[in-house]
Amino acid sequence: MFNKKTAFTLLTSLVLAGSLLAGCGDKKTAESAPAGSASAGAGTPSAAQSSDFSFYYTGSQNVDDLWKALIPMFEEKNPDIKVKPVYVASGTAAQPTYDKILAARQAGKGSGGVDLYESGIDDVTKGQKDDLWDTLGADQIANLNNVDQQTLQDVSNLAIPYRSSAVLLAYNSDKVSNPPKTLDELYDWIRSNPEKFAYNDPSTGGAGSSFVTTSIYKFLPEEAIHNSDPSIESQWTQGFDLLKDLGKYVYGKGIYPKKNQGTLDLLASGEVDMIPAWSDMVLDQLDKGQLPSSIKMQQVTPGFNGGPTYLMVPKESTKKDAVYKFLDFVLSPEAQEVVVNKMHGFPGIKLSSMPQEIQDSFKGASEGFRTFSLGDLGTEINKRWQSEVAAQ
Image 1 (tube, rainbow, N blue to C red):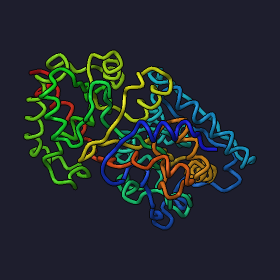
Image 2: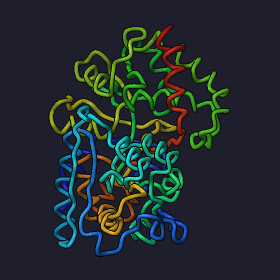
Image 3: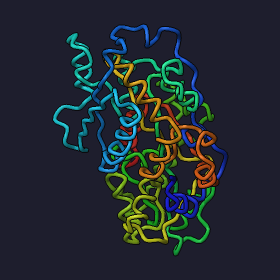
Image 4: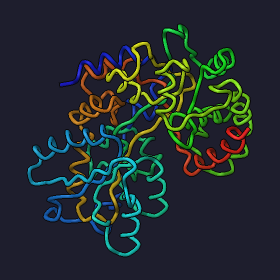
C-alpha cells in the first residue's frame, strides 16, 4: 500500500510551478527498438540460460534499501530467476563497474559478469560511445510503453530512466514568506538578500550544476537543452556573465560549498535562507528531522533541470531474458510505488499509470521539471565556471 506519510510530505512540502515535462512524473511512452536490435544481437541468450543474473549498483544506503525491497518482490513472482545484487557503497569502489564492463568487452570476455548496471547520464553517454549498452524496446520490456518517449530518445533507448528527482529551491519559510517564482525573480532576490543564497560547486553535486546550467541556458532557445554540439559553447557568454555578477551576492561573497550536502548544511544551520537542492534529499532529511520543518520547496519558471537514474544492460550479457523480465517488473506500478515511498522521488513511469492516490499526492509537486541532455558539455561548463566564476 502507498505510504500516506510520503504522500502528505509531498503535498505539503513541494509547491512547484509550470506544466509536467519530460523527466518528471509525466515521463515516458517508449517506442519499440528496431526489430532485432537487442533480441537478435550477439550474446542474446536462450530462456534456459536466463535463470539468474548479476546486478551492480552503487549509491547511498537508501539505494541499497530500495533494491533489497524490490528484488525479493520480483523473485517471489519469478521463482525461476535469481537476482544476484552487488552493492558498491559510494566512494569504496576499487575498480568502477563501468571500467569492469568496458575492459571485459575490449578483452573479448563478455560483460565481465555484469548483466545489469545502475548509473547516471555520464555512464550512459560514455557507454554509447564505447558501444557497451543493449538497445531496449517495448518488444522485450512491455512496460516501456509507460515511459516517456522523449526521455528514452535522449539516451537512444540504451537506458531505462526508472526514477527521477528534481532540483528546485529549498528555502526557510520562517525567513522567506514570498519565494521567487521565476528565474529573474530569483536573481533579484539574491541581489536584494546578499549572502543569504548559496549553491554548491557544480563539479561536486547536481544541485549546484543545475543552478549553473539553468542560468547559462536561460539565454538560449528552449531546444538547446537537448543539444550536445560543442559549437553551442559560443552562446554561453551571457550566462557566465550573469553568474560572475551574482558571485558577490552569494554566500561568503563567492564561497561555493562542496557537494549537495554542503549547501543543505548551511540551510539547516540558518547561515543561508535559500539554496537549489534535490527534492528527494530535502524530503528524506525532512522526514528524518535533519532539516527544520520550516524548510519548504518551490520550483521556478523556467524550471531547474533534474534527471533520472538509469538502468543499462551490457550488450555482451548472456542473461538478457531474465534481465528483461526484471526491468519490466521495475517499471510496473507496484514496483514504482516502492520507488516513490523509499526514494522520495518521482516515479519512472507516467503518473497516469500509477494508482490514483499517488497521482493525487503529486498534484502541484511534479511540474516544471526539465531534463537536460548535454553530453560532454557539462564537463566544459564546469571547467569554464572554475576559471571564470570561482576564480574571480
